[in-house]
Image (tube, rainbow, N blue to C red; front, side, top):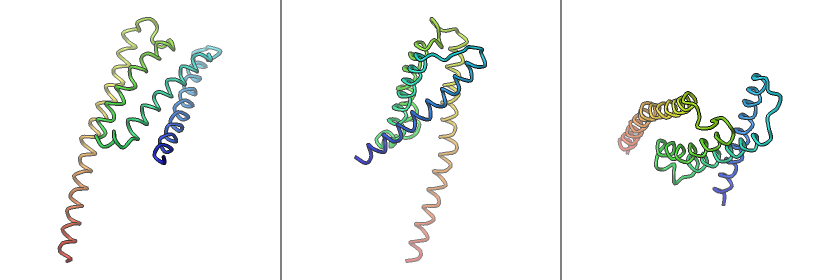
Amino acid sequence: MEKLKELLIYFRNAVAFSYSWLVICFLAVTLISGKDTLGTGFLLKLLVLCIWASFSFVICFRTQKIQKKGFIFSLSFFYIMFIPAEIGLFYLMGIFKGAGSPAAWIVFIAIIAVMYIASLIIDNMIMKKNAVDYTRKLTEYIKNKQESF
């Protein structure tokens, strides 16, 4: 029961942070573009997007079953869960009007690809190096413990 409570706390915090941040960003864009209002329907769709993103995040990055499979698996699973919903909600919000412009799709795909490649690089270079250092230090510790007996 404690684990479920912890997941719900992460979910609540993720929804609150992402929704407030996106509302501030969209409000700034609305004011800069000269529009007078930000519609209630749009805000509700944005809330649904944040709820699904937070749910996906909690499932992929905070549950032990998924975490045991590694970061890249969690990230890939998150993309599989979230991106189709994100695209659908972008259409409902009017961000991709009609079929979407080629420029909007290129920017969207490029952002996702760059983020995924950056995650792969970080995981393979930095995290593997830390794992090697950790293994080396653990081996040294065990060796020193055995010598002390």
